[in-house]
Amino acid sequence: MTRDTPVILLIRNFNFMPEQVFQQKEKLIGIGDLFRNVWKIYSDKFLVLAGIAVVPGIFYFFLGIISGFAESAGTSSQLLFFIIRSAVFLLAVCGLVINILANCALIFAIIYKDQIGFGIKESFSIAWSKFFSYAWVSFLAGIFIFSGFFLFIIPGIIFFVWFAFSLFVFADEGVKRLNGIKGMSALFRSKGLVRGYWWKIFWRFFVLFFIFFIAAAFVNFISDNAGAPFLGNIFSILAAPFILVFNFSVYNGLKSIKEGIPFVAPERREKIKLILICLAGVLVAVVIILAVITPSLWLRLII
Image (cartoon, rainbow, N blue to C red):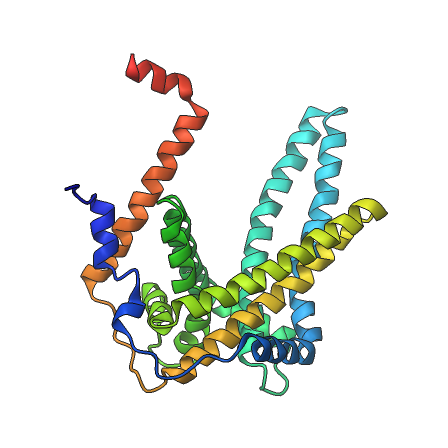
């Protein structure tokens, strides 16, 4: 009889298969109707969503031009090359901030889609005021999902579905309400919404990403053969809001189904379990990176 590893024990205690303890009472909207609803929201708010999504694209376009100047300057003046490369680095950091800000603005534009007069300016305004809180929730969800994929992939997939709605939880139930759900509580609220519907949500995301994978492959084929690499950038700009609208529609359906179920803030031990799983995944990632980058170091340690 084999003994379970600490990671397996943590996973078991963390209820990795919540469907076993939750009875479904209502059905999620069908995939066909879901895509129709998503398309309606997307088309109705297209100008606002596209206007927000294009901002990082424009910034990175000019950043690419500046980077080209840096490369050419290196052949004429080392000092000029250093100055331009330093400016490129600072602009790249600014680009990361703009990208996060734009994603946040997209989420608020989708949430406030029915509010008259709520456009690009208003979306960026509220996104700026909530930037650090949004970035923190985004970081937490990202690091937990990332670490889960290094624990033999399956935990990463489970985490992805669990925490898929964390940012919408933060924007909808954290910002719009006094003392709302923020930080790790947003992740646990998303997990609670998913409970009992994990497989149904997984297949909806699978269908979505399969469609966009085929579409992206087609666009890349056309752009490569037509000599128009900008087509891929345009596709990315248009696809990002659609995916977020899809995410919001699933989240809204789950929230409606579980409207009468109050959210109970996670206990400290539940947070610790999740953090330990995350640390285990990060440790595995570090070991893999060291094994790939410095194989000679491992040979010395063995010998």
